[in-house]
Amino acid sequence: MNAFTTSDGLRIVYRRSGTGPALVLLHGFIADGRVWRTQIDDFSRDFDVIAWDAPGCGQSCDPPEDFSMEDYARCLLALLNDAGVEAPHLLGLSWGGTLALEFHRLFPQHVRSMIIADSYAGWTASLGAEDAQARLDRCLRESQLPAADWIPQWVPGTFSAGAPQEVLDELASIMWDFHPVGFRAMSRALHPDFSEALSGISVPALLIWGGDDARSPLICGEKMRDRINGSRLVVIPDAGHSSNMEQPARFNAEVRTFLLQR
Image (cartoon, rainbow, N blue to C red):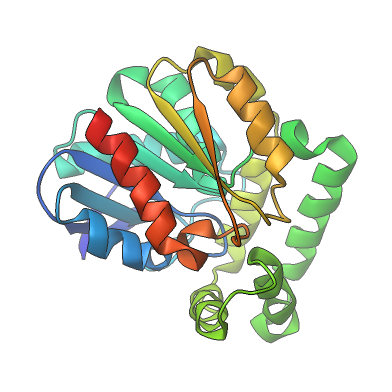
């Protein structure tokens, strides 16, 4: 594990493995870099893989509760500087995909390509204002509760109905270590509309969606594809929102094919 402290005093932890072109993995909320276990094992054979624990997740420290997506993007740039990486490929899942959009909007010169999986152009843009507010209210409420009161209800909805129990158990064990402050900060950061960032994407972009994603339905990916010039959308059957964990072989193959074409 690697760690550094930002100029604002936030201690950020990240995993790094392999050599080659840099590939940065951005996890979703109520999670940390452990969700990329199979991707790190696979991609580190050909890439310099970096998977952070975002502020408020895993072993990284909590940010202020009003931390914005721009603030997270600036922390990510600080990580790249610490790692000596100029322009990596970005792979963002769910919340991490929205972060990738905001990072490219702010720092396009620091992005080589983008892979966005089961994500949002912000909740408001992707789900509508009413559903976005309901989702935010739920997250803020449940962040105040013990993990046992809500994680058992969250985990099954992150996968398809046929997901193996061991995969559900793996994600549950990660979510169990959630940071209440980080959960609230990330939820608030994801609430706004980031759709204006889509048309400005200037790098090759691949979208990956689980065909059974109930948290970010496939139409969210289709709308994103239609706004990102030259992007391609791949749908993985028998996969829900955490498609990288549920169908890692297919997910990794799509990512690898895209990256090697770059």
